[in-house]
Image 1: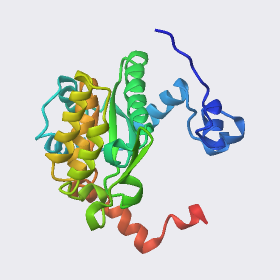
Image 2 (image 1 turned 90 degrees about the vertical axis):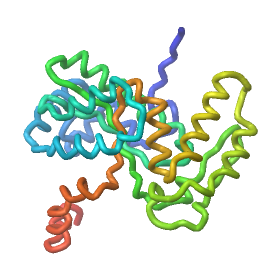
Image 3 (image 1 turned 135 degrees about the vertical axis):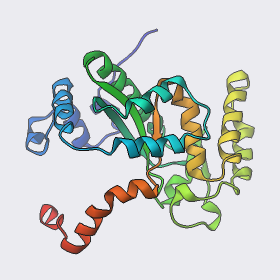
Image 4 (image 1 turned 90 degrees about the horizontal axis):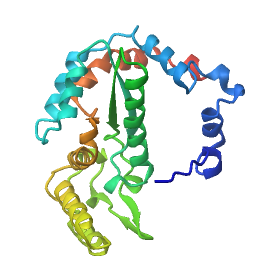
Length: 257
């Protein structure tokens, strides 16, 4: 198989800031703690080890969130690895866009998986686990409810639901999905498998969060990807003191003023 590598700057899909960061432009040095290269990652790993993490609680929450999913051996192994102080996560975050939305939803997850694999080879005395952190409390249904396929724009308005998109019911999605599945192709086993995956995700799971977790797990669970829905009372409890301190003392204000 032949590959053609295209520099970020030639895709015309990223901001100048993003391309300058990737090519390590010196003018950004004063803004960066770590460079986006192997040495920078090694320094970040060493620094990250200085911060305490409630690994037991994270493990407990994830185990509960995975309780209804068919297990993958690599997922089960990575869940247990989280309990080790020698384990670090390679995390990508994205909202639960309907049918994943933009293609870079997929690319971001693939990148996290690929980087974790590379680091496990390059730094064998540590463990690296890929994680998809789902921004399930985003409330921009205009963005998250829209995607394109074969040049056609599909839009779901949430059926008048408001608030966190991840909590929205999937019960009104059937007409939109039926319209999409009529045009899905080309015909064949792969198309049939994808159609069933979409039906299973969005017509047999009660919320957008549940549907997205199922969809992403089916696509990437075999590679050991962990999926975290942060819309969880126990996880938010870890952040409560920081929020309280910010509300009372506005500690972040001097940093942004």
